[in-house]
Length: 166
Image (cartoon, rainbow, N blue to C red; front, side):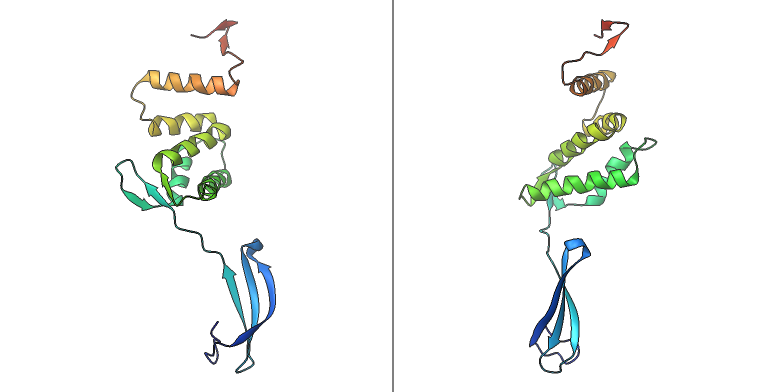
């Protein structure tokens, strides 16, 4: 590390501590040439993620797009901005934990759907209608039917007046 005062490269570490909630290390250093002290921070650098679109085009991962898509699905729903951010964080963490640097838009969409299903069912159906390109009313019916089956783990049937729905 180059001394900010005399520009020499010889120094010694005097003190090290965790910083930024454990995401960085703060080091106090002393220049061996001029004797002055200075502080440095070390952070791990995350590998850049690449998104592979349906067309085969590769673009940089943009977390803001995930946040925007989830937020649009949650408009006028009892979902806070913090919950939307948490969903985006979980998705990015899952991608990074997979060990790959490339992810398809399909994988991202499915991850969003998976989390929205647990967060808010109406937001889930909204997102699914755009993501799965619903064209007819039967597309909505099918998706809601699947949602109801998963909600009851397939053991409960949705009923009206004691009769199973068709």
